View 1: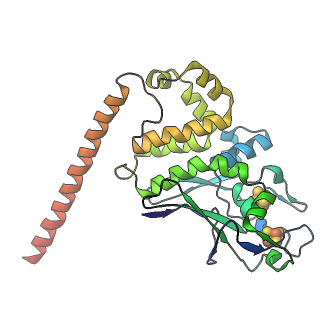
View 2: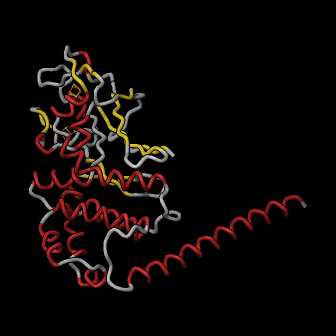
View 3: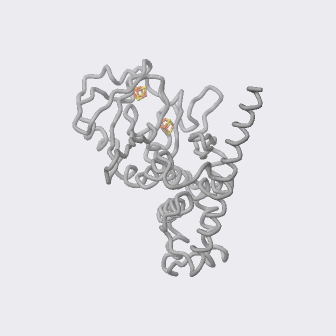
Length: 295
Ligand code: SF4
Ligand code: SF4
């Protein structure tokens, strides 16, 4: 098995694979002829941490931010929801100004990386993921013609990606597990997809969910953890990713109250058995149709 995590932007250009020590020739600066060209045609997928940084920058709740500044899209064939930055009708990022990016200090991961992207993969038998870097060369970007050479590592330090990488890692692992199939069975139900969206992107709504009596009756958490989750977005985001590992894959990442786990597993067995029976019946129908066509 070798699975990749998405490059955090879309492009028709075939990327070159690089390592941290590889050299690239690139410089972006305000005086360059293509200044803002990339932001005029922005296709930026946001990570949960990107949303926290941007909504804090704008002084908005994540619910408001999602409504005003993002558009939803499907990240995979199972309908896993993702979000992209909203653009104007011509495709320009709403944060672009004549002076450049108006949220530069808190710009998203994909904007920091460009013209690089990262692809995470888990090789068969490996315990940890491997990160490949890709260089995207697009005609409109003249930064590749500038006379400056540096390593991928130096470029990432310059763009201050380290904190974003650390904060994105666990969520990227979740995406990787989802793509690899994991121990889950079939397409997640709609309610699970909605829960994933809330746990990943909408911290205010997720916080209300976590602090509800229903949640507290199900999960066995220390009061001190509830206090942290009540006020810290990043801790809540990390907790959300752990919770989704439990919901998607049945990993016991969050302790549950006595008997709840066993009851849930019993219910899952019933769901899995029902799906198995439905699949057998579907195959049987296909066979019957084939034989009736032979008559
Ligand atoms: S967030 Fe900033 S850097 Fe990213 S596309 Fe928008 S204007 Fe450009
Ligand atoms: S050099 Fe590339 S990244 Fe910089 S403004 Fe121009 S198009 Fe954008």
